[in-house]
Image (cartoon, rainbow, N blue to C red; front, side, top):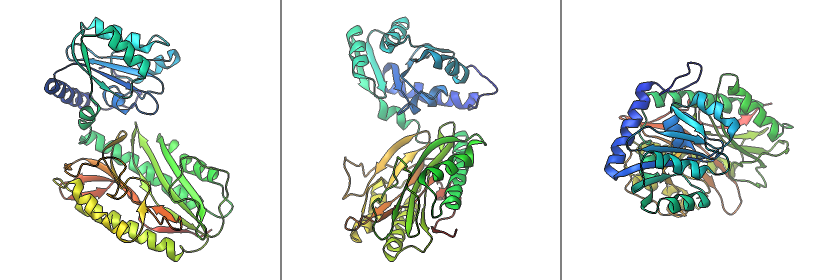
Length: 388
């Protein structure tokens, strides 16, 4: 490991813990090496081992024997990568042909056969080039097993998540204080980001939608905000995250603008809140995803549905398990996944009425402790009302 005292990073002991977990897992899987690929839209696996957050094509090659190498594609990103990375061999990937650089690292470590695990969505051409150069290597998908190492959080990770949750609470407070008739969605975003940036918080997400409660046009927080200005009778629904070093909180609240929630929205809120509370009540070490799905049955029983996940793992990115209701599942959902102490999840029922299009979202980041689920978000629950 290398160290720059001005750069935020975990302790040497924390990285040794991760590397020991990784080596033990590679032993069990009989892996000669691991190749991790990442970019702006999926590089958390690389960050967990290196402290570098990829913004463009980045490879981390981790041989079973020997030292790892971090390769980043854009030449002007190399100085920053070398400043923040804890991997001593951090360097340029050589420009347009990153796969060739990754292959050279495998060859330099005398890896030409055996099993090599792949983590991340390696570009098609890169993967073909690796296969062509190493016909005797068995490249296998290893993302699920690798990400499993990241599910149970260390004490240091939990501290970063608590700070991320505190920044996220500040973002929600700013949103609620700013939301008023005449304010645009863009202005809401400006207030959200300003709430934590001066304190060093990372931008996570600020999904939000505004819509009239009497004629709703949106029932899930939107990824893209608009110039639309709030009006009396609107509702603002939101999903916010801010963090530290990629370890973000997450919170979901709704705001009625200039008047109380309508009866229809109040009913949806109460069902979403009860669902959240029922799911949170079953989350403890030894609980299963079957219990979570059972707790969410009330949504369909009320002739409502969900658009977003009910629950997903979290903490340096989106992790397993990822659950929707049984009626809305769009892929197989394991019902025998077992929750463990110090796992961290987001519980976030996004309940809506398919007939009217009215909907909202309720949720928090939760740590699973020996005593049960504890919210890392401290901002109060509620269907808030703008009083401007």
